[in-house]
Length: 264
Ligand SMILES: Nc1ncnc2c1ncn2[C@@H]1O[C@H](COP(=O)(O)OP(=O)(O)OP(=O)(O)O)[C@@H](O)[C@H]1O
Image 1 (cartoon, rainbow, N blue to C red):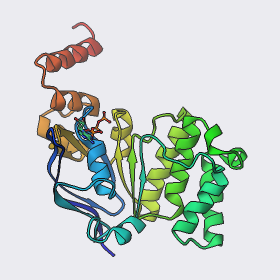
Image 2: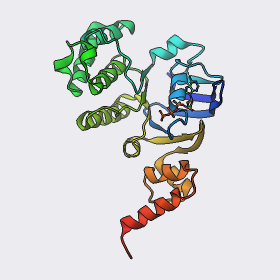
Image 3: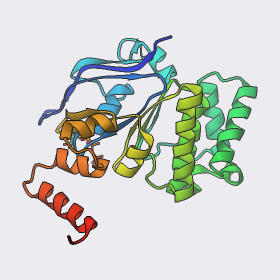
Image 4: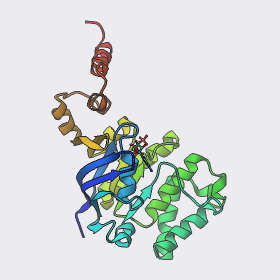
């Protein structure tokens, strides 16, 4: 079994108008929780779609759990799960039917399916709603069902695009705790994009920041801080400083810091 759960080699994507992902290289190991950050339009969703086999790269390659996603798509896709920012579900199925459908696609034994379903459905408080059609679900309920469905086949690596959007504070806390526990205890690998930098700072082992489709920073919080020469900075401050092209944002951050420290 490969210890590297995600390897990107010069991954690139061009649309007719522009190259939006440029030569991304990265290795993520088993059990890591990786935060993938960047300003709006920086190429995060495009990258995730290429990784999950939904958008063909213009150049470069992706390996998931040791399998090239574009040369061995079935082997790679058996080992990954993708939860997009907008849940894509079959609205005319009930939650129960949808989960059974996912279990049948991945040939999961009935006993295992039942055990995992009961566990995750309880975590996310969905017990009372599983018999209802998905079209009647709120956005947050759909997001929770997508997460349960993603975990049902016990993937090696799970890709989450903005996973906390639409979740209430309790569900967001459950998701954070569950992912951390699955990484630490079960060796799950998580690759997650988020704009909520507090969550990334609390949860992630490593963080990568892209701008205009290129890495501008990559590493642990300690490594990012030392690269920027800012030992006390929060991820939000580092992110603003690294991604800002406008002169003045750094001085704004400095002003904010001075304001927090109070008048001398
Ligand atoms: N199918 C497409 N055709 C042309 N350009 C596209 C296409 N899909 C994405 N893009 C462009 O690629 C760039 C990156 O978009 P992407 O959705 O990957 O960014 P993002 O980092 O996920 O943004 P956000 O944080 O706003 O979700 C944008 O400039 C976008 O307009």
